[in-house]
Image (cartoon, rainbow, N blue to C red; front, side, top):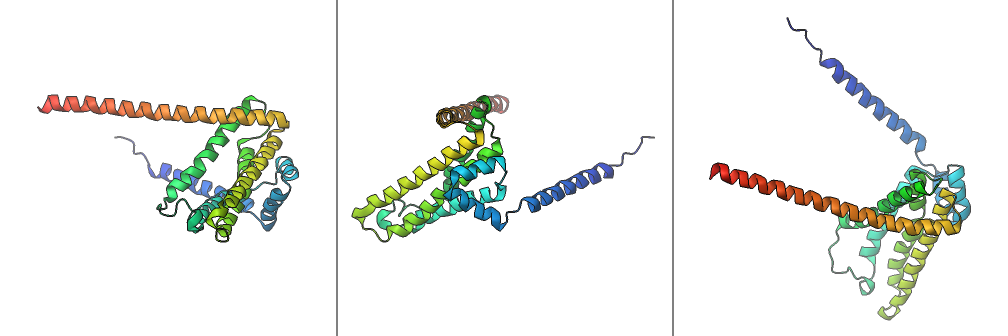
Length: 241
Protein backbone atom coordinates (compact mmCIF):
# COMPACT_ATOMS: atom_id res chain seq x y z
CA UNK A 1 0.00 0.00 0.00
CA UNK A 2 1.48 3.31 -1.10
CA UNK A 3 1.81 5.98 1.60
CA UNK A 4 -0.41 8.99 1.08
CA UNK A 5 1.15 12.42 0.84
CA UNK A 6 -0.64 15.31 2.47
CA UNK A 7 -0.40 18.10 -0.13
CA UNK A 8 -2.33 20.49 2.10
CA UNK A 9 0.69 21.04 4.37
CA UNK A 10 2.97 22.60 1.69
CA UNK A 11 0.04 24.73 0.48
CA UNK A 12 -0.60 26.00 4.00
CA UNK A 13 3.12 26.70 4.38
CA UNK A 14 3.23 28.73 1.14
CA UNK A 15 0.13 30.71 2.15
CA UNK A 16 1.56 31.37 5.60
CA UNK A 17 4.87 32.58 4.15
CA UNK A 18 3.04 34.81 1.69
CA UNK A 19 0.91 36.33 4.45
CA UNK A 20 4.00 36.86 6.57
CA UNK A 21 5.84 38.64 3.74
CA UNK A 22 2.81 40.82 3.03
CA UNK A 23 2.58 41.66 6.73
CA UNK A 24 6.30 42.52 6.85
CA UNK A 25 5.92 44.70 3.76
CA UNK A 26 2.93 46.48 5.31
CA UNK A 27 4.90 47.17 8.49
CA UNK A 28 7.83 48.47 6.43
CA UNK A 29 5.51 50.82 4.53
CA UNK A 30 4.01 52.13 7.78
CA UNK A 31 7.47 52.71 9.25
CA UNK A 32 8.75 54.54 6.15
CA UNK A 33 5.56 56.41 5.24
CA UNK A 34 6.55 60.08 4.78
CA UNK A 35 5.57 62.71 7.32
CA UNK A 36 5.22 66.45 6.88
CA UNK A 37 8.79 66.81 8.10
CA UNK A 38 9.99 64.53 5.28
CA UNK A 39 8.16 66.64 2.70
CA UNK A 40 9.54 69.87 4.16
CA UNK A 41 13.02 68.36 4.12
CA UNK A 42 12.74 67.83 0.36
CA UNK A 43 12.17 71.58 -0.07
CA UNK A 44 15.11 72.25 2.24
CA UNK A 45 17.31 70.14 -0.05
CA UNK A 46 16.24 72.36 -2.93
CA UNK A 47 17.40 75.50 -1.07
CA UNK A 48 20.54 74.12 0.60
CA UNK A 49 21.72 71.14 -1.46
CA UNK A 50 25.30 71.03 -0.13
CA UNK A 51 24.39 70.86 3.56
CA UNK A 52 21.29 68.72 3.18
CA UNK A 53 22.82 66.07 0.93
CA UNK A 54 25.62 65.81 3.50
CA UNK A 55 23.03 65.19 6.22
CA UNK A 56 21.07 62.83 3.98
CA UNK A 57 24.12 60.59 3.71
CA UNK A 58 25.23 60.72 7.35
CA UNK A 59 21.96 61.18 9.25
CA UNK A 60 19.81 59.10 6.87
CA UNK A 61 17.19 61.80 6.35
CA UNK A 62 16.07 60.64 2.93
CA UNK A 63 12.72 58.92 2.46
CA UNK A 64 12.01 56.26 -0.16
CA UNK A 65 8.42 57.37 -0.77
CA UNK A 66 9.33 61.06 -1.01
CA UNK A 67 11.97 60.15 -3.60
CA UNK A 68 9.35 58.17 -5.52
CA UNK A 69 6.98 61.13 -5.22
CA UNK A 70 9.60 63.29 -6.98
CA UNK A 71 9.62 60.88 -9.92
CA UNK A 72 5.82 60.92 -10.12
CA UNK A 73 5.71 64.71 -9.92
CA UNK A 74 8.32 65.00 -12.67
CA UNK A 75 6.26 62.72 -14.89
CA UNK A 76 3.08 64.73 -14.29
CA UNK A 77 4.94 68.02 -14.75
CA UNK A 78 6.39 66.75 -18.05
CA UNK A 79 2.93 65.86 -19.30
CA UNK A 80 1.64 69.25 -18.14
CA UNK A 81 4.43 71.05 -19.99
CA UNK A 82 3.79 69.04 -23.15
CA UNK A 83 0.03 69.55 -23.21
CA UNK A 84 -0.47 72.95 -21.56
CA UNK A 85 2.26 74.98 -23.25
CA UNK A 86 1.07 77.70 -25.63
CA UNK A 87 0.75 76.39 -29.19
CA UNK A 88 3.14 79.08 -30.43
CA UNK A 89 5.95 77.56 -28.35
CA UNK A 90 4.80 73.93 -28.39
CA UNK A 91 6.57 71.71 -30.91
CA UNK A 92 4.23 68.81 -29.94
CA UNK A 93 1.05 70.78 -30.59
CA UNK A 94 -0.24 68.45 -33.35
CA UNK A 95 1.41 65.27 -32.04
CA UNK A 96 -0.73 62.74 -30.14
CA UNK A 97 0.31 62.03 -26.58
CA UNK A 98 1.96 58.67 -25.88
CA UNK A 99 2.11 58.30 -22.10
CA UNK A 100 4.19 55.11 -22.17
CA UNK A 101 6.75 56.72 -24.48
CA UNK A 102 7.06 59.70 -22.14
CA UNK A 103 7.40 57.33 -19.19
CA UNK A 104 10.14 55.34 -20.92
CA UNK A 105 12.04 58.46 -21.90
CA UNK A 106 12.02 59.56 -18.25
CA UNK A 107 12.75 56.25 -16.48
CA UNK A 108 15.33 54.64 -18.76
CA UNK A 109 18.00 57.40 -18.44
CA UNK A 110 17.55 57.46 -14.66
CA UNK A 111 17.85 53.68 -14.30
CA UNK A 112 20.86 53.66 -16.62
CA UNK A 113 22.57 56.38 -14.60
CA UNK A 114 21.87 54.55 -11.33
CA UNK A 115 23.28 51.24 -12.59
CA UNK A 116 26.28 52.83 -14.29
CA UNK A 117 27.16 55.09 -11.36
CA UNK A 118 26.78 52.27 -8.84
CA UNK A 119 29.03 50.04 -10.97
CA UNK A 120 31.69 52.72 -11.43
CA UNK A 121 31.75 53.98 -7.85
CA UNK A 122 31.98 50.42 -6.52
CA UNK A 123 35.29 50.11 -8.36
CA UNK A 124 36.41 53.61 -7.30
CA UNK A 125 35.88 53.14 -3.55
CA UNK A 126 32.65 55.13 -3.41
CA UNK A 127 30.89 55.17 -0.04
CA UNK A 128 27.38 55.46 -1.44
CA UNK A 129 25.00 52.55 -1.90
CA UNK A 130 22.44 52.05 -4.66
CA UNK A 131 19.85 53.53 -2.29
CA UNK A 132 22.00 56.63 -1.80
CA UNK A 133 22.32 57.09 -5.56
CA UNK A 134 18.55 56.66 -5.87
CA UNK A 135 18.06 59.45 -3.33
CA UNK A 136 20.63 61.63 -5.09
CA UNK A 137 18.84 61.31 -8.43
CA UNK A 138 15.28 61.71 -7.16
CA UNK A 139 15.84 64.65 -4.82
CA UNK A 140 17.80 66.42 -7.58
CA UNK A 141 14.76 66.32 -9.87
CA UNK A 142 13.05 69.24 -8.13
CA UNK A 143 14.46 71.96 -10.46
CA UNK A 144 13.12 70.04 -13.46
CA UNK A 145 9.69 69.79 -11.82
CA UNK A 146 9.60 73.54 -11.28
CA UNK A 147 10.87 74.17 -14.81
CA UNK A 148 8.13 72.07 -16.41
CA UNK A 149 5.51 73.97 -14.40
CA UNK A 150 6.87 77.49 -14.92
CA UNK A 151 7.60 77.20 -18.67
CA UNK A 152 4.03 76.46 -19.88
CA UNK A 153 2.61 79.19 -17.64
CA UNK A 154 5.20 81.65 -18.88
CA UNK A 155 4.58 80.69 -22.52
CA UNK A 156 1.17 82.43 -22.49
CA UNK A 157 2.78 85.76 -21.62
CA UNK A 158 5.41 85.69 -24.39
CA UNK A 159 5.09 86.22 -28.11
CA UNK A 160 6.68 84.03 -30.74
CA UNK A 161 9.68 86.37 -30.96
CA UNK A 162 10.25 86.05 -27.20
CA UNK A 163 10.60 82.28 -27.27
CA UNK A 164 14.28 82.61 -26.36
CA UNK A 165 13.27 83.44 -22.79
CA UNK A 166 11.66 80.03 -22.46
CA UNK A 167 14.90 78.43 -23.63
CA UNK A 168 16.78 80.41 -20.99
CA UNK A 169 14.41 79.13 -18.28
CA UNK A 170 14.84 75.57 -19.53
CA UNK A 171 18.64 75.90 -19.60
CA UNK A 172 18.64 77.31 -16.07
CA UNK A 173 16.45 74.43 -14.90
CA UNK A 174 18.78 71.82 -16.39
CA UNK A 175 21.86 73.57 -15.01
CA UNK A 176 20.28 73.70 -11.55
CA UNK A 177 19.46 69.99 -11.80
CA UNK A 178 23.02 69.18 -12.94
CA UNK A 179 24.48 71.19 -10.05
CA UNK A 180 22.29 69.41 -7.48
CA UNK A 181 23.09 65.98 -8.93
CA UNK A 182 26.81 66.85 -8.97
CA UNK A 183 26.71 67.88 -5.31
CA UNK A 184 24.60 64.85 -4.37
CA UNK A 185 26.98 62.35 -6.00
CA UNK A 186 29.93 64.11 -4.35
CA UNK A 187 28.37 63.91 -0.89
CA UNK A 188 26.97 60.39 -1.20
CA UNK A 189 30.31 58.88 -2.25
CA UNK A 190 32.46 61.27 -0.19
CA UNK A 191 34.43 62.33 -3.25
CA UNK A 192 36.28 65.53 -3.96
CA UNK A 193 34.87 67.79 -6.66
CA UNK A 194 37.53 66.68 -9.15
CA UNK A 195 36.98 63.00 -8.52
CA UNK A 196 33.22 63.51 -8.77
CA UNK A 197 33.65 65.10 -12.21
CA UNK A 198 35.83 62.19 -13.34
CA UNK A 199 33.33 59.70 -11.94
CA UNK A 200 30.44 61.30 -13.83
CA UNK A 201 32.36 61.16 -17.11
CA UNK A 202 33.12 57.46 -16.57
CA UNK A 203 29.47 56.94 -15.58
CA UNK A 204 28.30 58.33 -18.94
CA UNK A 205 30.76 56.04 -20.75
CA UNK A 206 29.58 53.06 -18.68
CA UNK A 207 25.93 53.90 -19.47
CA UNK A 208 26.74 53.91 -23.20
CA UNK A 209 28.48 50.54 -22.84
CA UNK A 210 25.43 49.12 -21.01
CA UNK A 211 23.17 50.32 -23.83
CA UNK A 212 25.43 48.74 -26.46
CA UNK A 213 25.53 45.45 -24.56
CA UNK A 214 21.73 45.43 -24.27
CA UNK A 215 21.37 46.14 -27.99
CA UNK A 216 23.80 43.33 -28.85
CA UNK A 217 21.99 40.95 -26.49
CA UNK A 218 18.54 41.64 -27.97
CA UNK A 219 19.98 41.46 -31.50
CA UNK A 220 21.50 38.06 -30.67
CA UNK A 221 18.19 36.84 -29.22
CA UNK A 222 16.40 38.00 -32.37
CA UNK A 223 18.91 36.19 -34.60
CA UNK A 224 18.61 32.99 -32.54
CA UNK A 225 14.82 33.16 -32.66
CA UNK A 226 14.90 33.63 -36.42
CA UNK A 227 17.35 30.72 -36.79
CA UNK A 228 15.17 28.45 -34.63
CA UNK A 229 12.07 29.40 -36.60
CA UNK A 230 13.79 28.69 -39.91
CA UNK A 231 14.81 25.21 -38.69
CA UNK A 232 11.27 24.52 -37.45
CA UNK A 233 9.80 25.65 -40.77
CA UNK A 234 12.25 23.51 -42.76
CA UNK A 235 11.47 20.41 -40.67
CA UNK A 236 7.73 21.07 -40.95
CA UNK A 237 7.92 21.35 -44.74
CA UNK A 238 10.03 18.20 -45.08
CA UNK A 239 7.72 16.14 -42.85
CA UNK A 240 4.37 17.24 -44.27
CA UNK A 241 5.34 17.95 -47.90
